[in-house]
Amino acid sequence: MHDGDVVVIGGGYAGVRLARRLDSVARVTLVDRKDVFFHRISSLRAGVRPEWSVTPFIPYDRLLHNGRVVVGKAVRIDTEARQVALATGERLPYDVVVIASGADYPEPARFTGTTADEAVKALAGHQRKIAEADHVLVVGGGPSGVELSAEIRLARPDARVTLAHSGSVLLHNTGVERAGRKARAWLEAHDVDVRLDSFMSPGHDFGTYRDARGNIIEADLSFWATGTTPNTLWLRLGGHGAWLNASGHVRVDRALRVDGHLDVFAVGDVNDATELKITPAALAQADLAAWNIRAHLTSAGKHRKQPRLYRPMHRTPLIVPFGAADGLTLLPVPGGESAVLGGRTSVLAKAKTLMTPYMRRQLGYTAT
Image 1 (spheres, helix red, strand yellow):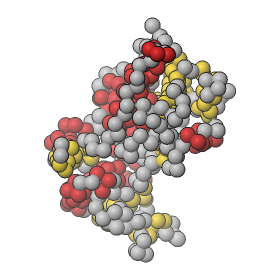
Image 2 (cartoon, rainbow, N blue to C red; image 1 turned 180 degrees about the vertical axis):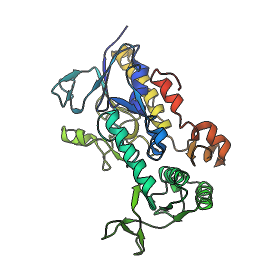
Image 3 (cartoon, one colour; image 1 turned 120 degrees about the horizontal axis):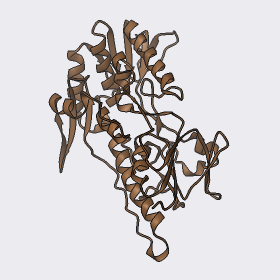
Image 4 (cartoon, rainbow, N blue to C red; image 1 turned 90 degrees about the vertical axis):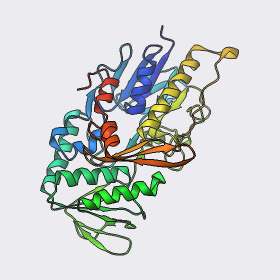
């Protein structure tokens, strides 16, 4: 029994999870501009190591048994007609629409182009440049910057690698200084030049970079791991700028609905439900939204079920790989500071496989 049309805009972690959850109870259409799922968690290693080039790309063709996946670009949500307009001119009717368009990430964690072949070529370009570089600069000392610096160092032990971070400690957004110290100790033990309190900007000459004090770094290759931008420009251009906050995220209530619209949800990196833009938060939101959407579709009037409310994650396990054989894991402890666990836990949980078998199973494929 299928109780309505659900259009999910965006095939990232949250969109895939939610579409799969609703496939047995609704007519689901997943819309994404890419022709495959992009396993972003494995993209940093794929941007460095050729043997990982195709790992991040998993076809959508086994995701849904009853619904369908449409490769295309959503340009507008017509809330009066209850239709999603695509760039091709096609219009998809909906009873519920879900905005799961995610965020744009810096290279090499970005899907470049619209096909897997185009994205693989972009990763190969990064691999080639890293293999040829004498000095690589990574800007940003959050989890991505630390992970990328470690991957580059392990792949290029003969190159200079510099990590410049604007904060006074690495991984500062975790609120656990011990984690930052552990990451810095590993990097410096592997001859990565870690520069703290260094807010970087491009210099006047190509290949030069300047910090806030005027110090110059010369590098022939740089990567900026300094945050993400929500993919919501299409909403603004489509007449829904009022749905967005100052940072461009979709404002949602505690049921993950766009304010004032019982049939419009937003999940994952695209919304303002939590500042922790990490995969576990996206998956948790997808699960809660799926329950609320089922309740919306199957109940009405005085019998309408009350929605479940999302509790933002303030502390969650976080794993930062240092290549495939080491890393650190932050494990929240009730009433205290998160425990910082070492290599064995990190390798088993994430660092070795980067959760690729798990995501392949989520999309209907075998683990390998």
